[in-house]
Amino acid sequence: MESNNVQKSQMIRKRMIIGVVTAIIASVLAFLNVKKSRTKRPIIVRQPYVNRDSLREANIDSVLYCGDSHCLGQICMRPSAIDGTHVRASVPIEMQERFRGRKDKTTQNVLAAVDFDLKFTYGLASWEGSAHDSRVLGDALRKGFKVPEGKYYLADAGYGDRKGFMPPFRRVRYHLKEYTDNPPENEQELFNLRHSSLRMCIERAFGVLKKRFRILDAEPFWSYETQVDVVLACCVIHNYLRGVDPNDAITREADLEVETHEIMKSLT
Figure (cartoon, rainbow, N blue to C red):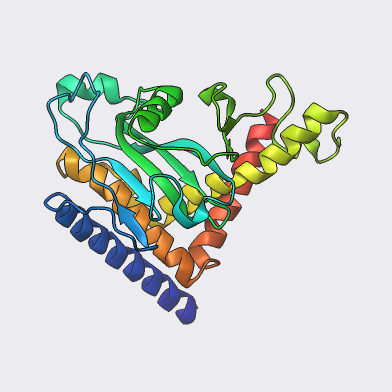
């Protein structure tokens, strides 16, 4: 019993330390322009926050690239998945309607791409929670996000038909649990089964990120510019920790939650 309490205490302490480190990184990023270099380590590419009706005058940097080029760096040769997730945001009252996400809370709609090691290879933060995923992707493409020639990102149907992005077949069963007792009956169902299985990597990555950094689900108290930087900083730290211990306790807990969520989705 005492051992369990000690372990829990250590886990809470670790999360607090990581949260503080994230805040420090975010504050530094608010003042520094970190340019691309030739290193193969994750880097931040600073780009001005533009094309927003609500915050047009703001100069908020919002893009994360990992690698040494404007695509996927050393991960260019491997396919990956792309999706959006909502992160809590705090904005002035007159802007809150634009930022209200699916659960009636003010959020950022964050676009991200991950590889099959659950590392983030691209991230675009700062879009308001009411923005449609396809609109956010369009902004990413305008800002230089590219798909390597002959490669594809696995994407959900919400992103539409775009070159370089591979959605599942519509009106065909999709979620893994739907196939548990009923194997695929045709080519489209087999494709969707494989698609769903591979695209789970991004659901898992988001799950681990939010499980590790509880700060992303809490109402922030920083300026919006810093809120955007916090998201990117968390992604960078996440990538580092994936390299240190890819199967830590937080990852196992998050995987279990994602699996449970998928089961519930298949029953509705």
